[in-house]
Image (tube, rainbow, N blue to C red; front, top):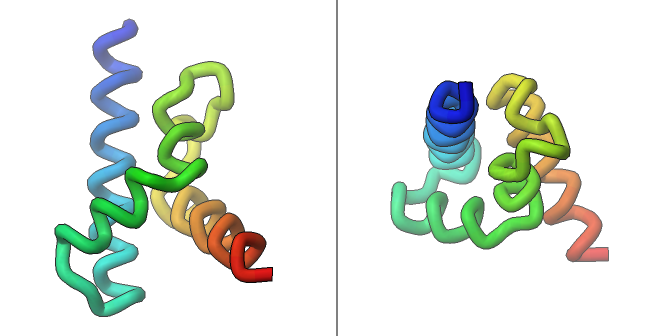
Amino acid sequence: MENKIEFAMCLLAQMSIRELMDKKNCDMTTAIADFMESTTAVCLFDKETGLWENGPDYIVGEYEQEKLKAMA
């Protein structure tokens, strides 16, 4: 079960990064760096938060909210 959860986390991170690339019109390197340095990514890879149980749209929404709060 652990391997399946970790696989799901990695897949969701990839899908979220692809969505961010489209939304921000940026390259993969930039999207990966921005996402993986975020608190959202940390939460995605923490089994206790349950963020990995959501889809990429939800995860990207959490990431965008995090960035908005950081700008305020």
